[in-house]
Image 1 (cartoon, rainbow, N blue to C red):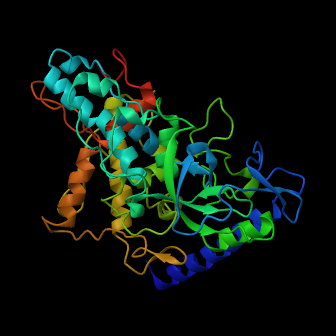
Image 2: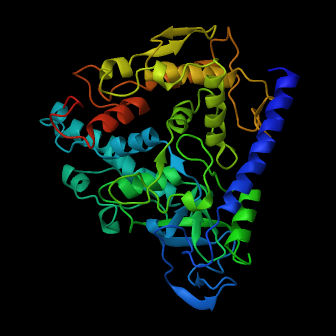
Image 3: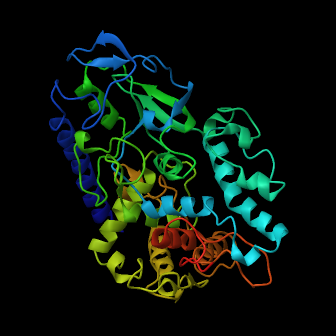
Amino acid sequence: MTAGLRRSRLAFAVGLAHSLVSLALTACVSPDDSVGGPGSSVTEASGQNAPNGLLRRAAYQHAAPGDVLEVQIDELRPTQGAVGYDQVYYRLARWQPDLGRRAWRDDPIRLLDYLNRTLGSRIDDYCEDTGQGRRRARFGSLSDARAVHLNDASTFACTDAPGTHITALKTVVVGWDGTLYLTDGHHSFSALREVADGGPALKVWVKVDANYHDAVDREAFWQQLIADRRAWLRDGNNQPIAIDRLPTRLGLMGPEPGGMADDPYRSLVYFTRGIGYTNAGLPDFGEFLWADWLRGQVAAGRLKGLDAHHLRHPPPALGDILAFSTFGNDLRPEGSDDSYAALVRNAALLMASLADDDVVLAPWTAADLRRTPLVPGTKMGSIEEARTLLEELPRTDQGDPASGPRHGGKLWFAVNYRTCGAPAPGTCWGW
């Protein structure tokens, strides 16, 4: 990227950031609207009137940065307009196995192995996301596995107490009215809200990153939150939205109002993780910054967009969507050119091709967003690791029919779940 183009993108991005702040604040609700926007209500109010006449919540108003809070999922309000549905679908598919999987139905040892890899990952992820480490032990029997229920802590155990691993916790900020706003973990907690034994009342533990209860009113709170880059005010099409158009709850859109929209480019970025970038040390909303950049590459003709690939069934067959794609040691594309994996490959190679000081979205550079440097001609190191991750994306969870279960690829889980819903015998999962 030339220096002139970098300066141009920098100026554009700075201007866009100022526009978003202005748009968000001019759309603030009036004093007689509800605190959290459409459909919200104030509970556990302290009785203390805020300057505009609204009541503040008492429970979390004075929580300090670093505090660990036990909450229900529906006490958390989103600070972004969308999530990548395919990322959520991947988790839901991996977490919800077919308890009578035909491939191993008559082989209890392999069936138990399968349940430990799938159903067991639900417990592993829940323990990790709530700072409790991992599962204390693998399921010892099929009856143990079938008895697990996230809403019943007596049916499973984590290695540590809630909040022990504080760096693994999802983060919140306390709003001017005492409401908890989630700043990290929208995908994880949306999946937990959607899973059958989770839901809005599921207990989770979060860490307080900041407390804005001293803000004089709602407008001042959002102004500071946006200035601190703790909100992503875009919809699923990456268009700016006002703060009162943010979702009112975590989870996907559906019959229940208030859910989060789908940003397919955010899903795309997730699948490039470890191939085009690493998520370790990313700034808040870093993967949305990459999604914004990838949309720009499509607009500039440097990347074929979603419509140029087989992504959704029907009409493309699942085999076309999940066709194998990779690249050689020279980074030249190999395999399918229009599958989901091909889109991931092409996006990741573009991300990896940036120089460290190239601006992705000001002020963040490719180095800030942890792009993966892939050097053509090398057989080992990052290029081999990236290629392995890419090639695993569409693979099934069973290889040779005579072999036992294995870990399926992220795309395989996501696409099948999106197409079929929860796993069940006789569906297009092929069971």
